[in-house]
Every structure is written in structure tokens, then in C-alpha cells.
Image (tube, rainbow, N blue to C red):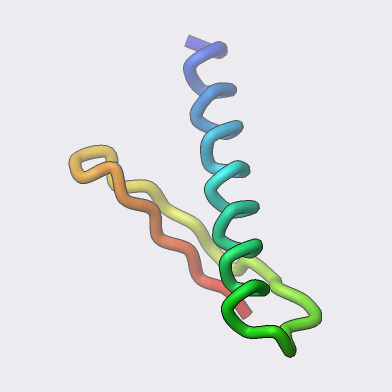
Length: 52
């Protein structure tokens, strides 16, 4: 069970990283991205990320 939780945490970190990369590529004047909250919907497989 610990392995499964660690894998989920690793996946979430990767999604956060990829999202930040896309934001910075889309908006060239972004200097910093702060992640406020994250969430994952297991039914749909979608992620929700609130950034500042």
C-alpha cells in the first residue's frame, strides 16, 4: 500500500511540473508559479491545480 501511495505522489508531482512548464511556455512573462492546492479525480483521471 505504501508503494501505491508513493506512486500517486510521484505522479502528482510530475503533473504539477508539466503544468508549470506549459504555463511558462504559454505566458513568457511568468517569473514564478506558486501552487496553492491540487486534487485528482480518480473517476475521470483529471487533475485540478490552483496556482498563484
